[in-house]
Length: 349
Ligand code: MG
Image (cartoon, rainbow, N blue to C red; front, side, top):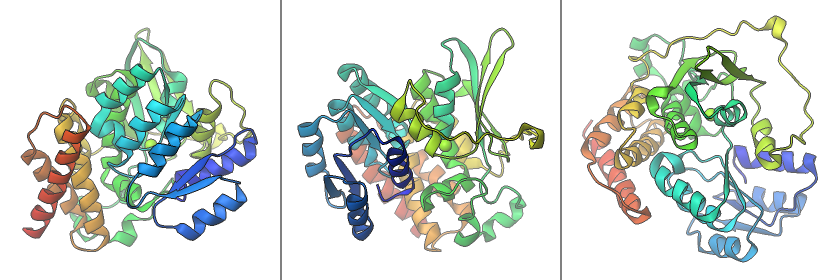
């Protein structure tokens, strides 16, 4: 709850006034968590740094109406699976859960008759305009902080250049992932899982204004788009109150001032994004894609690798992982092995 999504969720919950918060988690920011617990009357705050045992016990004990999963990284998969077993509705902000273990998440959802609602602006938008027989869908992307940089200059990009996101204010990892567009690669896979699509049915275009979040293309020639200001509080509130819209916002884009322009995603500039399409059917490689990216982002932020090396390392790790995961334990070993290989590849650069 001390991350970007958690803090905005607390704001939304305060405004809605109809939810009681049973528990919240934090990773390192203990002081902020304590302050939030007092302000929002959160009965229990838990540190997830060491393990999730106490959190899982609490979830089983309380059986909450809604669980918001906004835990970063691979760890979000086990939290999502537990949330699906114990809650009536799961709001999923952690796309890694679907990227690495999409089939496990869907099985758990079916088995427990639980609702799964995306808290990702593009997927929340898709959910709102989706029709069962769509021909294809489109997700938009800002293109990240380096969208106007020349390709030859990208290897000189420093963490401070990359951390200036043009549209959204978010955590560090997702901001770097926006610049490489790995984040959008995750979102393509996320959309496939949530809406039963094949990756070739999920198109992505760069849209600088950040007003259109998603579109669906229907067979009779109709295109539906979803517009709104880029504000994560809107998809959070939608997920919490669905199918109602109880969140009062009333701030709409001024259409006279919009241009609604879209651009192709350059293959040379964003190689790590296109990799997502190639590994669509392979959960082992998808897990490697996420793990290698996590390691690379960390290494880039510590100035251990160049920006352009992120995609190269990910590609090498994904290439080396060959496995046929059957359960969460298998995915955990693939995740650990991918991290080890990523460090090894970085050492050899
Ligand atoms: Mg998104």
